[in-house]
Amino acid sequence: MSDHHEDLPPFCHPVSTKLLFGVFFGLIGLTILTVATSALGSALGMPPAFAFPLAMVIATMKAFLVCAFFMHMWWDKSFNVLAFLSSLLFVSLFIGMTMIDTGEYQPTIEAFDINNLANVEVSE
Amino acid sequence: MAVADSHNTHDDHHDLYDHGEFIAHHFDSAEQQFDSGKLGIWLFLVTEVLFFSGLFVAYTLYRTNHPEVFEQAHVFLNKYLGGLNTIVLLFSSLTMALGVRAAQLGRNKNCSVYILITMVCATMFLGVKAVEYSHKWDMGILVRSAFDLTYTHPTPTTEIGKSLHISDYLVYLCVVPALLLAGFLVASVISKLVNKATLAKFMMAMTITVSGYFLGVVIGIIFMNATEGETGSTHASVIVEQPLMLMASTQDDHAADGDHEDGDHDHDKAAAGSSHDGEHADHEEHFGSHPADGGEASFDAHHPDPSTLSRDVGIFFSIYYCMTGLHAIHIIAGIIALAWVYWRCLLGHWRTDYFGPVDYVGLYWHLVDLIWIYLFPLLYLID
Image 1: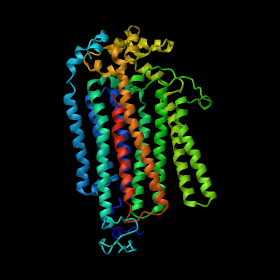
Image 2: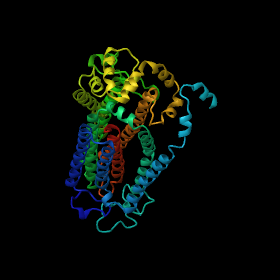
Image 3: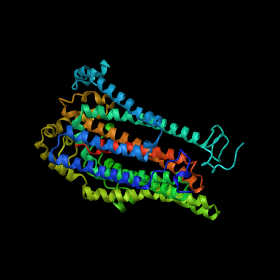
Image 4: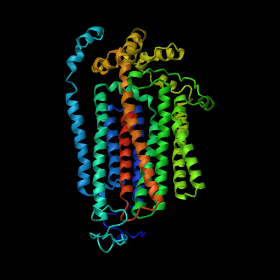
């Protein structure tokens, strides 16, 4: 088959090897960065409130690189991109709604008598 | 109606009657078939994301309510082994993307090489994972209901375990791959003898794929020993440096453990845990036999009851095993899908107008990588 891209059907978009390798080295760099910030952060006493979002930001940058270039999203139909990204909306709803509800049984838990398990089991 | 020359795609943009070898009769053109498949795989990936999100919810919930448990538990995960696996998986993603490119250009031979490398990386990942899992099982780091932390490694009882100084659990985890390795090798030789060259090649590729698992095991052991010291006393150093209230859960009389416990009193929480060691040992036994009571008593993150702490650490590992285990199952499924793509590479099926299956399997493979990208910092890099 020909390497000339004009011979390819319109739905066929081979990504240049240069870009793929660039993305790969970018991902490796970000992996090293996240391990390094984690190790340095704990050594320097970086507060977890800062370390955790940092790790997530780096992970999301990596996810962007994989999605956009390895998964060809950059060139994909916008409907496919929309469909996939909508899953993130549902995930955030799922997590968000559950988090709102997490205190719901707190009174029951506080009333739970740890030294009197027999009573608890009877009441159940 | 079915016009044979489906290579002729550049001048007539897939007219209605340009049906190639692999274009199903219900599709008008190669492009329509490709786009339908692509939409299908994206929708599947959406369900996969939502599938995993259940576990992410469990993670978020427990981490929010019990941040201290995550801080205690993560020292048992080796971040360098996790990092190694991340790089292996990222590399497999690169070779997968190169494989898709080769298929798009109709280069079946190149594609088969890239797919083979991808499969070897996948089994390597599982090999490293097996080293990690068996190491934890040795220490009694199991899911919540079976959690029974001891810092000593049991001496191997199996012959292989004894001669190689590896965990019994690791030996057991190698049984199925060893059988597969032997099976594929024999199948390759037999196929060669009966002159089925393509099948012989496929079986040989599968043999190489499975041997990647053992390569992963060897690399994993080397890497773990390099980052954690001697296998026998692994983690002892970690425990000395980072004493935990986890010590509360060790009920054995090992002299070594006793030494470490003295160090615990530097830390408020740890001191609270270890000073109640003997007192609450029986309680813990009791709780251990009532997993149904599990999470309830432990929700009070502000006033943690020392006697419940070890149970919570078990919950971290329940989440850890579910997340990484489900991910590992996806890796195995990915290898099977990749093997199918490899087989079709050998048959020379991929063409510039027909590479959909490679692309779809590739998208799935990248998603597995994507999930690991999040699992790695969430589980291994908690500080």
